[in-house]
Figure: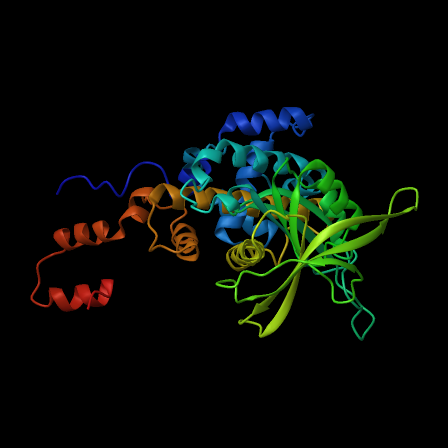
Length: 412
């Protein structure tokens, strides 16, 4: 039998980690000083160790360290030259600044920018659109102030809130900020990465009229949902098209008021579009500073906001974000950053394989099951049926072969 292209000398975990340029990690470590006075457990070793914990879905420090140690000679294929004991990993999660992992993520995002950008996106309107939202991750103890009311017994678990900005072009986090769960969402608007003519899309938790007015002066656009108790003065009503846009109930220009830095009342004009949602069987009121678009386009932009909810669902369902390897804020930030790094790496693998039939969850599952096997993960994910065909060719000829193969591969 000829040599199979589905197996070679690099294990699956090594293939995933190889997507991280070591020069990128070295640069981040140098700029943040994360390897200062470190003898053995470098930033690169720390990154590899934490990525292993994410991919293997292990939730204990001893499980991570002993699990790596048990791999023995296979660690050489990972580029991991030191396995930290439990105490060292714990201390590093507490003391090594989580900012270095954030810088590594941002570096990877820009490094693979040309791959992850969906150049086939036909709607030119969406090419400069960004979605903004937050998700709160509950913690097992009151490390950070939680959002919402306290429980009946007076105890309250902590919560860390991830504020995320994604581009609709790739639907991956490109700007992230962590705060306590009880913090106000609208503070994140000041940290958005936006240029002239970019479009920010977010929900009604991000009410900040002063910021909206500032964007208007800078030529930055936005679409958001108006709060139910919001006050405004109707300036004029725009005419609705007769032959289309049946979902558009109202299109008008309104005056909004806000207090500036000197506590002086300022006024500015926004556009309010009322649409009917068949899904929710309710009216949805949108606010925007885009007066040049059709109302239906405003509606389309806001509907795209749900893309970020799918990202949050993907992260929480596939990666360990319920149990953390440390009980301090820095350790929690490191673990979240490493989940995002692994999410990005698997997204790169999916894009390289271009197998639309293979879901993200199934891709994660296959990689997780074969972390230390020598499966050529890119070849397998491109065409899993090829490995099945190879196995059939090498399978001993038996009278009941078809029955056995059907049971083994579920080919009936």
